[in-house]
Image 1: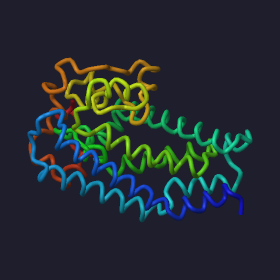
Image 2: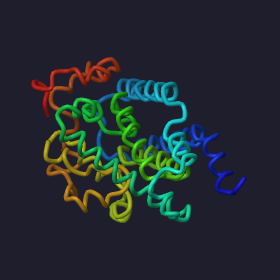
Image 3: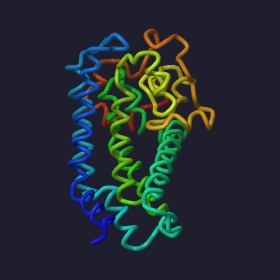
Length: 278
C-alpha cells in the first residue's frame, strides 16, 4: 500500500472520531471564552437555548450517520476508485490538490450561503439558523436537517467533479465545523488580534454582523472559513451600524421564547414567511 493509500485508509476509518474530537475541543474552548470574555450581555438563559440547539445538532448528526454513513469522505473515495474529477485528471501533486480542493469547497459554501438568503424557496430552510435571538457557540451548529442534507448533496457533487482527495474532504469538514463554532462565539477578542485574524479567517465580530435583524446587514459577511470571498464579491461589511453591543440579533416574528424549542425549529420551513418575513 502506498503512503497516500495508508493515509486515506486511516482517515476513512477514523473520520468520525477526528471530527468529534475537533468539535469537542473547539466547543469547550469557545464556551469557556464566552464566560471569561463575553462580547455581548446574555438576555436568554443558556438553560433554555442550549438544550434545544444541541438537541437539533444531535438529531442532525444521527440522521446524517444513518442515511449517509460514509458522508463526504465516502464520496471522495468513490471518485478516487473510479478516477473521476478534474484535479485527478490534471495529475497534480497530492498536497496541491488538497489545497485547491479545500479552497474550492470553501468558495462553494460561500456561494451556497448567498443562494440560501436570496432564493425565497430556500430561505425558510436557512431561517432556523438566523432566528436565534442570541449568537453564541451553539448557534454555529443550529441548522435545519433539510439544509444539512442540501449542503451535503451540493458538496458531494463538487467533490466528485473536482476529484477532491479524501484528505481534503476530511480537512475541510473539520475546518468548517471548527470555524463555525469559533465565528459564532460570543467572545470579545483584543482589537489587535481581531484585526490580524480577520485577514485570514472569519472572526466572531465579522460574522455577528451577518446575524443582525437588519436585512442589509444580514445579507453580508456570508463566509464561514475564509473572509476573502466577501471582500472579493462585495458582500463584506466591517461593522454593524449600531455597534456590536447595541445591535439586535435574530429575526422579526421569531422572538418569543416558544420559538426556541426544538419542535418549532423543525417546523421553520412550513411557517408563514409572509407574516414573519425579516
